[in-house]
Length: 131
Image 1 (spheres, helix red, strand yellow):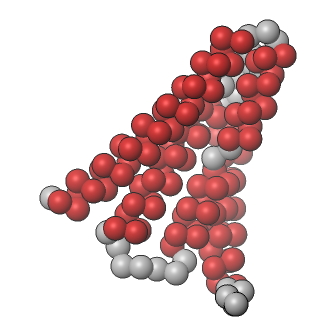
Image 2 (spheres, rainbow, N blue to C red):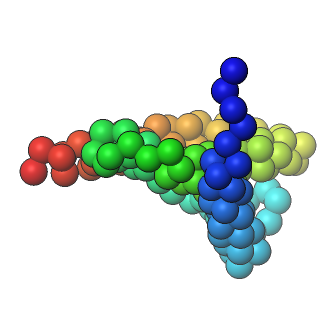
């Protein structure tokens, strides 16, 4: 049975606090209407996807293994920074306002841009390794 690691939990907590503060600050700083394209959350989720892929690839493939960097940066920071649940709420608001095309476009663009960000981040890390 794996022992409970308080330092790992502290790393997740610290990363999560920073990620959540960054997300809330950006969300409050850049607000938009309920039925328009939610650029702030879109940007948060795409940059968070990029960051998670960058951290995961770099920490796994480039740097010496560390017990606490991945939990702090991946689970903590990126987990609290990204907000796909808010994306779902925004899509529901668009649907309730009969903006079906906007809802579908936003959902599809979020997934496509997120996947592209993951590919780009991983490629950058791997190319830097070869250089």
